[in-house]
Every structure is written in C-alpha cells, then in structure tokens.
View 1 (cartoon, rainbow, N blue to C red):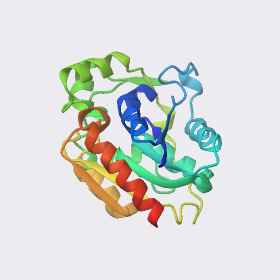
View 2 (view 1 turned 30 degrees about the horizontal axis):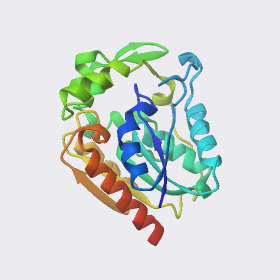
View 3 (view 1 turned 120 degrees about the horizontal axis):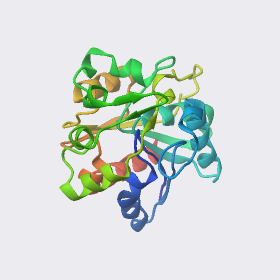
View 4 (view 1 turned 45 degrees about the vertical axis):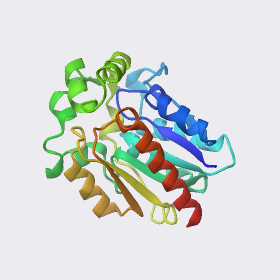
Length: 244
C-alpha cells in the first residue's frame, strides 16, 4: 500500500481532500492532507505567507515519516509540491499533478497563467485583489472551480473557501539542476477545467514531461466531481512509481 500526501490549491484547505482521503484509506493506503499557511484552519497572517513557508510546511509533513510519499498537488498545490520536492527529493516517491501547475526553475504560478494557453482562465478573470489576499466571489468560484460538481458539493466547497495569500502566486520556484531527477511525474488532466484550461495543462505536460497522463472529463476539482476515477488514477500512479 502507498503513502499519499495531498496538497490543496488556492482558496481551499485540507478539507477539499476529505472524501477522497477516506476512499484511499478504506483501500488500505496511508493518507496525509494538511492546511497550507493562511488557508483551511491555519491562522498564519496572510501578509506573512510566502512560497518558501508553504513548501516548508510540506517538507515537514514528508519528514514526519520515513516512507517516501506519492505527493499529489491540485492547482497551486503543484507549485508547492514541486518546490518541496526539490528541497527533500528522498522523501518523494512520485509527483502527481491533479489539474495543477508544473513550474520550471524560475517560473511562478502567475508566469504560467500568463501564457497564451491560459487566456480563458476564469480564476484570473474573476479574482478580487485586495493585497495581501485575493478573494473569489461565490458565484465565480462555482463557475471556475466546481462547474462539474454536484450543487451540494459545490455549495459546501464555496462555503469553506478563504481569501488566498498572494505571495505564493508571484514567487518563482527555485529548482537546483538535477534535484528532481529520478522522481516519476504523473498528470491528471481535467478536460472541462475552467481554472487551468486543458490547453495550458497540455502545454505544461509537453514542456515538463510526465511519465503517464490520465484524462478525466471533468472540472478543476476532480476530488469532488470524479472522486472514484481520481482515486483509481492515484492508485495506478502509485503502482507505476513502485515498479520504476
């Protein structure tokens, strides 16, 4: 059985993984989800939150157990996962990008959203900026993040969202040469994603390289909208990583 560490994206918290985590645990896996600084139940002042602080939070989780983990990041969580993996590669059995950003050394999340393929991104189109945070209006969140979720799940997620600290969006990752070599990378492409358009997901996959891609016909939040299919993909990736 695998150890999964799940990294949430912007505006959310560990709670977004709750139902999926229960499914994976029921299948015998170890699952750890945690709040990034300033999100979920974490009370770090938003103005203090940095990309390094977020990556260090993940590093601490990885270091808490000796077993290397399958690290799955959703959305902004892909940036955090990449930066943390560069800091502690020996505890990362694989990186899984779930409708997530894959930055290269020196790239920020905002750099990726500004690529031509990201032009229809409905988060950047609707986020309300009041530094040091950005806030997604409720209706815009439902349209951009949860468009394929049930009404009940979408309402639940929107009700739990928090303003997003902005610094992690704008800070480039620092990935020393060779630090990620040998770590398998997998991608869950979400074809109906309105936050990271499928065209941008495909460009990142092409430019960064992934060992396997699973495509789901759903939105930016497959851990709610296609939970069983995402769990199956994660288990498949864990098996592939173990075989490499």
